[in-house]
Image: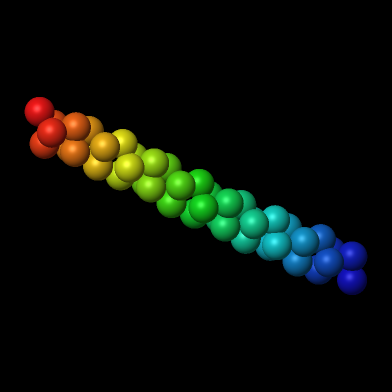
Length: 46
């Protein structure tokens, strides 16, 4: 019983890791897109 419980908790931890990794990747992509957008507008003004 304890072995399966440990396995389930480990599965949850893995899932949380994947979840956080996805959020982190999306945030990085958004920030990168924002920076590119800002520089693009800056170049367009010049």
